[in-house]
Image 1: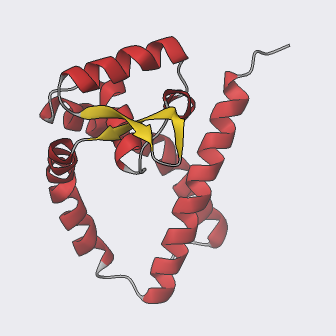
Image 2: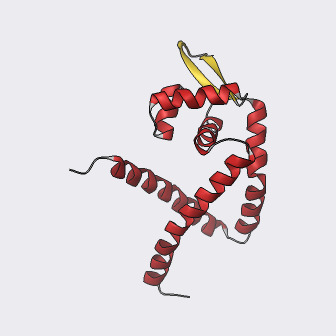
Length: 154
């Protein structure tokens, strides 16, 4: 086994390569469901919620509200999403994924989920907890770094 410092450097070397792999997967999955990447990302965000306002979706996608309106219009027109009144606050309109679109999303990722289950089967509970902690940390750090990069340099 490599020394700890080398393992850390090996992980750091792999992470930038993984982002390209994730981008490739996102593009392939978007193509599989006949969507562009932005519409697909929106559908993913919506499917992991019980509905979002257009403003919430804009923040999740990190795009303007105008761009979000176009995305929502496109998803609604294609039958992937619909607008409905928020049952908790009738002044708000939520965008939700249709059941058919949810099934398509699940089907598009089914093979990956099965392969990941097989890959994770070889890990102990302790290792799985470490992986889960690492993935959570990685996501948080990625969001933080993205926000930093989005700020104009002075």
